[in-house]
Image (cartoon, rainbow, N blue to C red; front, side):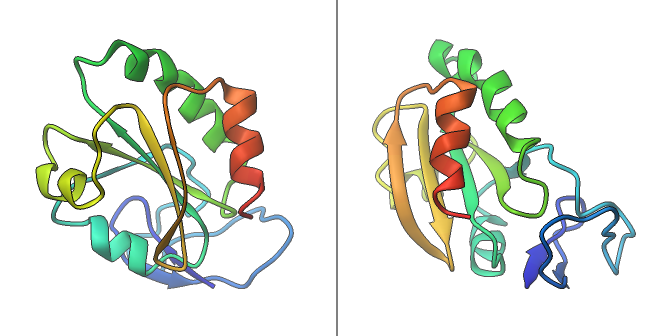
Length: 140
């Protein structure tokens, strides 16, 4: 399966397994098991979405948004449950107006699940960690 490195954005081919002890990027040698959400913007969004065979869960947010700030720790915690099963990413709507506009982001936080390069699910509003993880597990 194709996985985008969260460190250098290169595409890696990784054998599909139930769990992984180690998986490093062929280019930068960074761990592909890193679950810290990636920062996406207008310049790299399409590349990551198109080249990911695992679901990409994107949090559209803004720094001034109270519910976004409240949900951020839940988003990061949920990400730790799915190393190489799902990639979590954040899009700051202030810094990525083209992507935000293209997906019709009208309220934040908005979460969009992409699978095989296509939007498959969308939810607006802050979620707790359990609800977020349950939603993501449906797409793995």
